[in-house]
Each structure stands twice: as structure tokens, then as C-alpha cells.
Amino acid sequence: MARKKTFQKPPVSQEMIDACLAYAVSEGDIVNFRFLFLPYSPLRDDSTEDIESQKYSYLWPEDEADPHFERALAAVQQPAVRAHVKAQLEKKGPAQLPAELLLPLADNAVRLGKYTTAAQTYELLRIRRRMQEEFLAEADRALEDNDIPRAVRGYIIATGLDYDYAAFPEPLPAVPNYQSRALMLHAEYPKQPQDCVALQSTESHVRTALGYLLLDAEAAARLEVRPLEQKLSFLETLIRTCDPEWERFAAHYRDACGLVDQLSKRIQREANRAEGVNDTLASEIEAQNETLDPGTIPERLLGRAIPGGEWWQYLKELAYEHPASALFVSRQVISKDEEIIMPRLLHENPLPARLGLI
Image 1 (cartoon, rainbow, N blue to C red):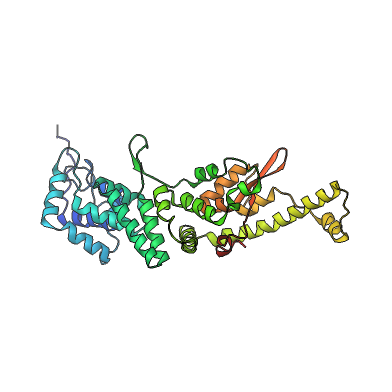
Image 2: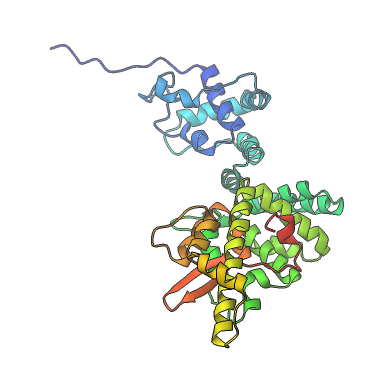
């Protein structure tokens, strides 16, 4: 009986190994980089997986003339790095990733805004906290020069490198969760109007906003000593940088404010009637033509309706799409069984006007 033939793929060329590793490094892609060293990696000669098959085309470089790829390729082709990679691809146990490539991979991840990847890679190198301090220090120097965009970028990168050591089953990069934080911000119904976040004094509102948006109490505390005007500029730039669709929300917000004005007039008319005060003819005509449903206010804020949506559902959706929106709304009881989220502004606070909310 003839012996069954076994698959034997040709050895993977050094050029292909270099190109795939360099591409992962230039793209700041820790997932693909780690995959290339796994026991079933298509770069291994003893693996049945073929790196040249179409299903692995995502590992091939898209543009070999890209300067970032060229620099990564030069690092991969260093004799010491090649020797290390070769030894790990022939190794039977878990591979030891080359530190010489992890550092540029993390730097490229920062360049591309892949902060969780950068955090994970810097953590592998045991320099994550030091890199955070470096970015914060650079951002503080930018503030000294009043270069707000550079300062905001530095703080975004530094806080993006945070790590969650309480994650299960192992520590992981921290990820923004504004939906939960917004609920915490509005957890208690305000006993009086000035208790809500949106109506805090300007200094207090700015402090709350920085802590909420930066997701890092230590980073926010570094900004405490800065002049109020600089913190306002920082916040405006931070909000617009992190939310490219902010102008769309601002338009929805102004629209919702118009509905709130109508609701306020209705409440005032009802209060006048309760006190026996007659409305003007104009007010009576306006009341007869009025069809305002208070439940449409959160719909206007969000830009769409949530069927049967409660106030907290609208708040979570708003915070997910536009994190800073939670800073300019308040809970409001409309009836015994109904509560909504509605716009609230302190006109003495210059931030809403700078953000186009009024």
C-alpha cells in the first residue's frame, strides 16, 4: 500500500519574514506582531500554514515605499534582530518578542492614535508609566508656551496609556467608558437647580469637566494651577479633538433649547393660572397652538428617538456619541411617572458659547 503523502511547504524566505514583521511594526499592530511568533504562525517552517496564501494577505505590506515601513524594515534587518527572530521561530515554547522591535511598534501605535495598543506594548517593555510621564511633561511644556493643541494631544496620549490592573483575568489597557461615568455624574437628582453639573460655577464646572473627560484624576490635577482662561481653551480644544461630530451635537442642543423655552413658558402660564393671574391675549393664542411633548426634548438632543427610552438611556447614548454632552444637561421630572434629560446652561460660564451651544 502506498504511503500517504504529507504536506511539505517550502521554507519561508527571509525577505517575507522581514516584510511581515516590518509591516506589523510600522502599523503599530501588536496583535499581528504576536501572531507571527505563535506556534502555528505561517512564518514557521514547521507550520502547515502558508504565508503566501491569500488568507494571509493582510500580513503583507501595502506600500513598501512608505517611509515608516522602510524605517521598520531597517530595524528588522539588523543582524542581531534577525538572529533573535530566527531563534524564536525555531523555538518550540513561547516566543520572546524582540524588544528592539516592540519600542518602534509602540511609537507607531501612538502616532496612529492606537493608544490601547501602545499601552500594552509599553507595558511589555516595563516603561509604560515612564512614557506617560514623558508625554505629560511635554504637554506641560506646551502649556507654558500656550500651545494648546500640542498640550491637548500630549494629555490625550498620556491618559490613553492608562492601565487597568483590576481587570480580569489579567491587567489590560484601560478603555474609556463615558456611558457609566455620565450616569455617575448624574446619579443624584438635584435638590435645587444649582446642584446639577451644568449649573456649577465656572471654576467648579471646569474642574469637573477635566476630571470627567481625561478619565485620570492625576492628569486633571496637573491642570489645576493653570489660569482659568487657559483651562477653558484646553477644554474647548479637548472636546472638539475627541469628538469630530461635536458641531452636529451643538446644532441638536440649540434645537432642544428652543423646546425648553417653550416648556418654560407653559410652566409659567400654569403657575399664573394657579395664582389667578390672567394671561395676555398673545399667551392665550400661543397656548392654543402649542403641541409640545416634553418627551421630544431628549429626542432632539440625541437626534433620534429611543422607543420607550428612559432618561438614563438617553444619557448613556449621548455620552457614548458625544462624551462632553453629559456636562451640559440635567435630569428633570416632568410628571409623577416621567423624567427626562434636558439642556441646562449657566450663562456666566463662557464654555458653552465657545462650544457653539448658544
